[in-house]
Amino acid sequence: MAIRYFNDTPDVIRRLCTRENRLKHDISNKLNIQHKFLDGYNALHNGIVDESGRAMMWGLNGNGQLGNGTNDTSTVPIAASGVQKFSSISCGGSHTIALDEDGLLWGWGHAYFGQLGIGTPPTENILTPVQSLEGHKFVKVFAGDAQSFGIKEDGSLWAWGRNDQYQLLIDGDDTDKFVPTRTSIQFPVRNAFYCYAFLGLYETPSGMVGCPNANEIVNEILPSWDSSIYGFQKTTSVRYGVIGLDNYGYAKAMGYNNQHGMLGVGEEYEFVTTPTYLSGNHTFVDIRGGHATHAIAMGTDGYIYTWGENFNGSLGLGIMDNPVWVPTAMANDHNFIALATGFRHSYGLKEDGSIWWWGYYSTLISSLTPVQLYPEII
Image (cartoon, rainbow, N blue to C red):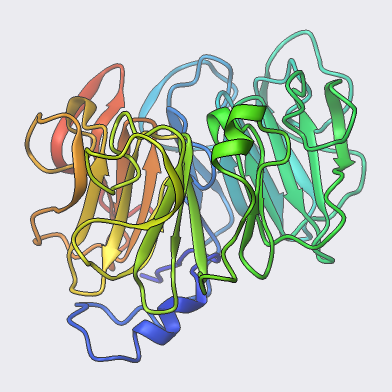
């Protein structure tokens, strides 16, 4: 069975995996990724694109966000309706967006605020994939709560959906956008995030993370972070904060609320106004956060580390202690090669193509330790 991997795996993995470490899987040559679990936002529904191009979806479906023509929740992956082949997918609060093989935008699920980018919102939810008629082509898309972002080949950042708090990064404009609209960011970006209090974040090729639409308090404590100064090659967001990996795999965090421990710097920190090393002196090859109040990282020692809010076992440590303030290793018997975070839950991908979950998986079930979601999903 062919395995497919995440296309946003950072360059730091190439460097770190050429060094002597105890990673059980060589992931340095597995960078041709065509699917993702959750990336950017964290919802209670999830999806990947399998090797045939199908959107495989699971989780809550009250707004049709699984795209299979129903509102029925599914605890196992099911295919979205239609014959369209996709190359990537991103899951938002109650909507899903995807790119086809030509880079054209599709969407399904909750559409009230224009977050699908398909024009004037319909009066009902969209239960199956619908293509945007605007003709925009993107290389990446990111779904937020009720808004979406897209990056074009030239690095320009576009946005659509709910904008009542200037979430879409458009200067002086707080109206919802029903189709992809160019943001006011006038320089190339490589990633975009949706991060609760920050609403909209962006990351430049040099690693600068900015939150120009954040409120005055946030901007005072967490100004734009030019991670190129610190040599960061990968950044991720957690609720109220940002974490970055430097060239050597060390992680630093900055944020204005560490209530749930998601910054990983220890209980003594409430506000972290300058980049601060995570506790434990660990080095990582990848790190995942998002809207969640927890984070997860793949260590160069082969262990998976988690920290932050441990609601219903969302850290996969087999305990209910909450929160966990510093990076803590999970049991090393799963050998995950890729990770993703959801809302109070996480996922791991194994080399055999199986996906595992732990934490608050849905209103139906929770688990303190990893449980196999589906044996051969890709």
